[in-house]
Length: 155
Image (cartoon, rainbow, N blue to C red; front, side, top):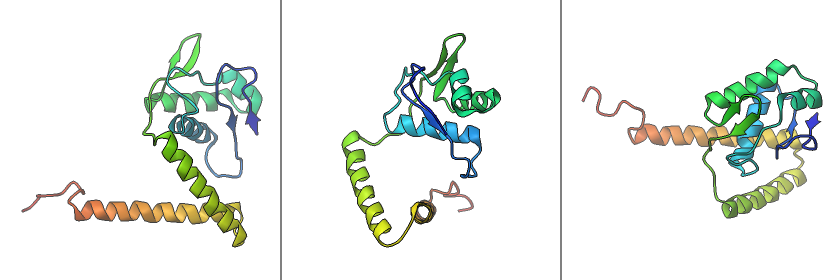
């Protein structure tokens, strides 16, 4: 399901994956965060109006409002009564050149994975497992370096 940008001044359109297991409002939150992270949305850009999202995705207005409230809570957007919801915050970003190079490398990896017989779900599972391993190795390194918040306690 997609809500496109034709009737809205927003540079982002939302889509839902009903089979993802991710709550609808979180899918909207994640898409806004990703759009900001990748530079598709910038400070001052307007998010789609609630009524446009509701009409385009056939979802409850409270779901969209919940997503927008969560984004406000995270400091990423702010609502302006009677005007709309606008991007105000930022998230950590990698430079455009670096993103382009990483994107190209990832496409090569995906083609290789596809040729090896992995479908999209298999690629996603493998990527998620590798991301989990990366997080674990970072956490282990932080613990070794005293980054566990307990450095010097009891010494």
